[in-house]
Length: 177
Image (cartoon, rainbow, N blue to C red):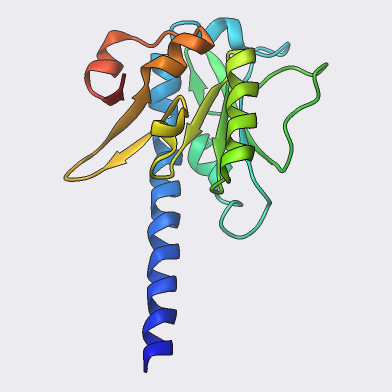
């Protein structure tokens, strides 16, 4: 009986994390729209890329279409730039163009998170994490799910990364100073 109860708790926890990840994926566009330096983050073809960091599996697979859903067969546009999202288990090499944001699809341990955070800060890339505690650990942004769902931002990381968001977005977000 206890074994069945624990198995049910694991399934419930997984579905909770999965719901958080999917909810956060849908909110990335709002954050990007609030990014004041967005045009400077466009790649050579004028598009914007969100890198979904994690192993490609059944949970990660739908995330690009939630982050950048096509509109009538055309790419989603943000401020006149086509938005793309792609899954990768690795960060791009130093010589390639950078994503505007890295979206975590899996929880990272402290050393891996710290390394990724430093990489994002040094390059002015948004680190967006849907996982509880990650914005407090330094992720640039995430999602707060309490009585209501709202954006969650870390002001220190924004400042360290040189990323400026519109005041309206900050005013309607849960904030870590």
